[in-house]
Length: 83
Image 1 (tube, rainbow, N blue to C red):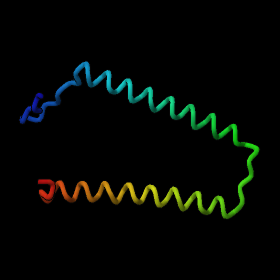
Image 2: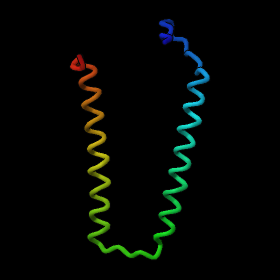
Image 3: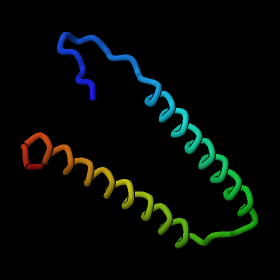
């Protein structure tokens, strides 16, 4: 495994890095296509005010939980609690 140079130069991506980026971009576009397909297929479904409220609450709690867990990861990493 290569270590990055200490003089501030950027290391170019290897072939494996480019392949990984292409695969991840493919996953992103397939999931985006599927999300649009499902969203448009449910255009006739009506949701009440409670449904929208709980949908928004679920999104906010999920994003908050993800942000909180990432904050804990960075905190433990910077304070050497990982060992």
